[in-house]
Image (cartoon, rainbow, N blue to C red; front, top):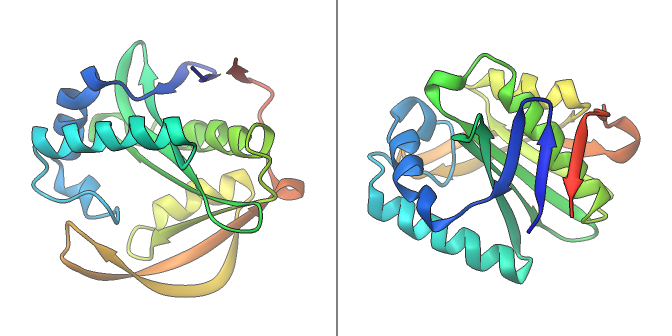
Length: 184
């Protein structure tokens, strides 16, 4: 079981017992509308399916998802999944009452470190909806660069495609934090 720590945050594998908290965090329109895969409203049944998929895909190595915890309270989730050619795709979300406190940046730094160090990624990619530039700024702090590519991404919560800016992080551009610890 991989556990990642960075400063005051712990990223741990998502567990079945997380479903009620994930349902509570994700049943927030301001969160779901800025993601591709989170519907709104978001129910306990949605969370239970998400948790089961996270566990299954983590075991197969298809996608690694982690609960972002502050003082043992789940405040969000982050994940990384394989694409092609040694490239990984990063994603994250943070609970409304935990935004604006640097947790997204710390979690994205931690999962990027995992991607480069454990998964041996050469490139990590991410996207953000252009009407949510705060997410783009989180990625820029890590060293992500705009690719210049704008795509349309389906959003379950919005029920439509959303303009998405694509970003890319090379290992040589990564603003690594010395406070990241990955066990085992």
